[in-house]
Length: 328
Image 1 (cartoon, rainbow, N blue to C red):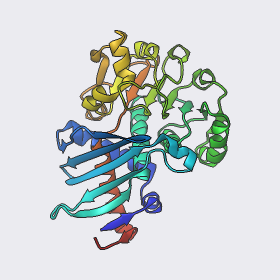
Image 2: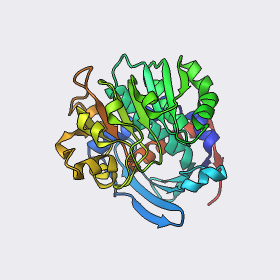
Image 3: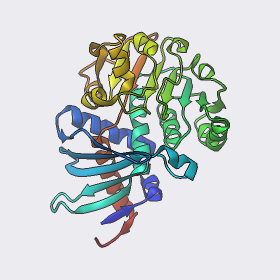
Image 4: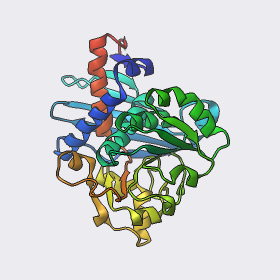
């Protein structure tokens, strides 16, 4: 069995690699080449553990599972808020062939979902980004935005004092390499006014900015919330959105408060969901239709993404001689 730690993954798997792996996963899902039960959730003291199995056929032909736990108090301990592990099974024997640092893999494949959506839906001339949240997933989300659009400025907002400033300072070299300035925003309104692309990756239970403050033509990636009673986007934004896309329709309609809450309020309808990203990649649905249109992509994640990304990491790691072989 091959153990692949964070350094191994980052050494062989770039954000562009993650974006292409996610595209492969979306297409496989749309073509019906996968078997993916809805993830199982178990409430545990202080958080929730999620179990996400999948089989992906076609060129991937892999089965695997991710075990991920959301532990909000971990931040105060200096540990990841969303620790995870991914196991890939051998095609022939069903034994565990590789065990990967799922925290790193989740950060990359989740950010890559935003990267795919931004590449497909944001205006080509997008120059200003806004990023809500500075936790464990935020740096990869920034990396994905910069990988697909030539942003000149990214505004960072976090409600906790000093967090936005610390993140902007720490990630400034990454921004500079892409020609983007990172600017801490004092308020949510300061972050979103005039922004062309907005990504939310927070643990907030309530909307993190006002939909009225969003300019026409913006693209929004809603990433953080994953339960029916929590949301990062308000109902006003969902009313204003011209086209809404999802990563996985069944999972989103079971879990995403960003859509389910305005739906219950009568301020959103299911026919406003144009399609999922796989359908968009396959050309089965149309993306942005005008420069003034507001587009929204809601992701809750699904195991196909983890299995495809893990399979591609494993291939690259074996080719590069990375990882540690251990006896099971």
